[in-house]
Image: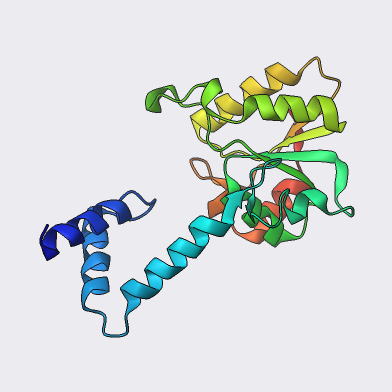
Length: 200
């Protein structure tokens, strides 16, 4: 394999990341190749360390480490055990935590129901959520999913599954732009949305 083929492989991996197009991925790969301060080596070391240590929390799905399992949010006794906030992915947990407005537990679905992309209920962490609702005694499930059609459908599907579980189901109030998601909203918008959540 020649040097350009290595860079093409690096660019192909970068292009799989959200928000990075093929051209940007190529520029990043080429920059790594000619960076005089050994950025490629540094990136390789950081990625190796992260691969060894970073995990998803076995309970909520948030980002944690091998040494902290379950994560800090799950074991924190000051969190409100009556509330669980359902989000699409771990980045949404980070966005909500930045607001300081929510003090309950979390559950990351790791996706949404999206027939167009071949993702059904069995492809996301729905069964884990149902088990947690039954065993952890939540009194309220807050749907903090996006406002696009697939997120709305996912929230409604979950609400239907939980309707006989003796739990209040709410969703974030308006404030998140239509077609957007939790991870793209500013802290003030998220804070207002949490405080004004409504029954689903």
